[in-house]
Length: 267
Length: 201
Image (cartoon, rainbow over all chains, first blue to last red; front, side, top):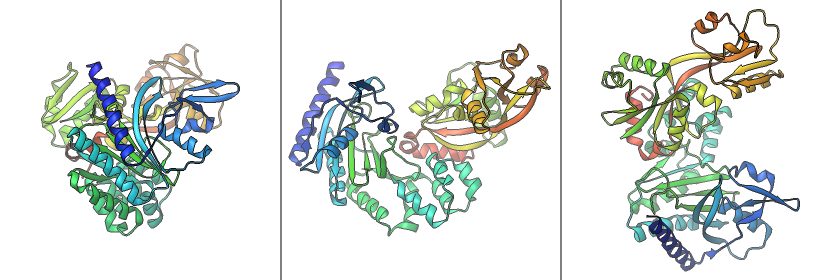
């Protein structure tokens, strides 16, 4: 069983990195020990930190951060990067694979998401069951349109329906939206903000993914466990309780997609 | 099938009563007979019985899709869960209690150190905390602390031990919590159950 898993993981790595090479992504292989600043700890609480010669270092805990640090320190002649390799979180090693796109257009983001879904469905003959999406800025639109208190933000993030009902009333559009089934939320948001750039992008994504026959859900409470994502964010699930693909916008001009090889249900 | 984590303490009896009052006898009748089991299945819902503080751990991991837990537990420790709804039972509150005529509180004994710490910090009151796992009423009686922070339901336990409430800290209610992933992947079953028990109309 263990041998089989190791072999399947390596086969995945080979097929995936070949795909990225064909699609003109720059493949990166970086040192696992990297410079670290204490300010990073908030975003990467599970990172293991060490000190040498009065400089802090961490063991790589997240490829997105590693690549971002690299891109901030060195001039890059390419915008699309791909990786496969281990990261260490809370003393456990897990394998990550994924891509980072710097300054991508919406078309390029959609192409990359499509490329990942198509790779999994073709190579592994597995169907995606569902995708959940959100953009934190959608809540800003509601807060601004209805003049809501900033405290509402926390209640929406934890999907605290009873408190939202108490504060907003049962007829308020934001309460009506959040108490609806998540698969119905997209139509309700479209009733108010269909012409906004965020919903136009989500509509294009939905159209792009139609061929996969998966359930498409938008939920204003849906957020990344990684706090650095600050715009559009998604998770795609096989018929499994952990997402296989997750990704989104960070740093205002970058987009990452990661393949969950540990418990995404693929290997 | 969805899995719902329950605790077999006071909240469980309140939940059974709530289901009886809301025409959900199919659940309450089946659950009432399960006083010694670790889990039971009713229709398409698997109920597991855990220790109260463990309910959010089961839900956070996804072993359970939903859970019913006191707000004291998820206020004392953070969990990465959806905190969906207050339920109309399990009401009680946190209080500061001590022997009558206690003039100041320098040392507080409690099982809920994070809640006590936040409360006194908010009041800019410098105190020392002693963590106890239970029977905290003993601490002021034996001189271990000046007072306690504990859950008060009827006040009879305090009264029986000669203690009085000095200050109410916060209300406590039963809450329905949900896993952040299966809320989407099992959407239909979860919304069906939430509607059935009256969390969503």
